[in-house]
Length: 414
Image 1 (cartoon, rainbow, N blue to C red):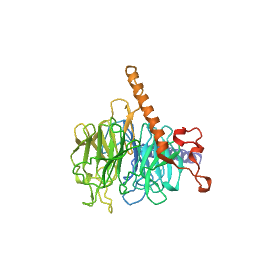
Image 2: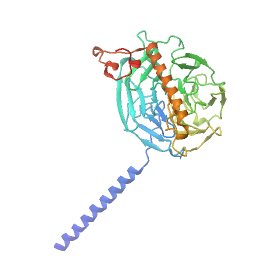
Image 3: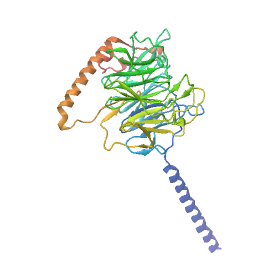
Image 4: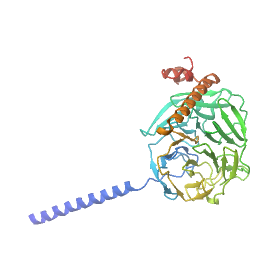
């Protein structure tokens, strides 16, 4: 009887040990699987060149809002069939909302349903910085950051009492303004393309009415659109780190009632557009996320259908080489740490590296000029725009009074 009990005791222990090993193996295998996001259309996105393309939410192929936040690692090389994805803490969910990176590339700003949120890349945490009922009409809007003032610009982002929309200008420290410039008389359409260009020192804005530039000092001006452009909305446009190149890709064509795969590259010094090779039919895109890194244009998501039908593309990722002017299946990471930070708005890049001893003098002069220009623009901004104040009766706090240490040139005399 004792031998029988001993046998069953040993057998049970072996069963427990085997089950534990199998369970641990399954657990480790499950967690070893690479993160795979759901394909979405109209996600919020921003990027840091050579670091990552950050993507939030968007609509999936069923028309539902996807609960996902992730980055595509741009510091390592990968094939378009197996990008380097990394899951991030969930942010506010929606589709086609303004999104931009801060001037230092460390804070990712999004505006969702009237709430302004910032994702701190260092701490990997989301924080709501303010909320307002006048900022809820954000669908189809874009955002871009001016590196000299740190301000985020959102065309048609502020709703006026008469129901029309002004330029919304956001300070990521917790305040916002409405631009009172009446020169911008374009039809107030959405689903436009937007980027900041460092050589032009202005926004580049494209909608079905044409292409325009905007700056605080210069206001709105006409700009040459790409010849042969058929898309009228839902495009993706980014600027290179130097500002020498602007890439415009994809979009929806009203006349064709279809997504398109056209790519146009602007040589900014000569203000000359050229058209690159069109994508295969199953890789045309509307409303994707995009970035530039290491002389490559990168596309994620979007769809190949029209405004009524979402058709997933064959590949989530596309890469276009700006060196060879061709589509490729490989992304090549920078050989060393990048020296520029991209500011999408969606996207542009500016120097952030510590200057070497051999270039300190010129770098200091450049920095001084940038600070002087930024100070002048902030002073102009405070005169030209109206700061938005709310009292407790409107259930929204007075932002400037809550930020007592803020620069008077930003908040005015409060």
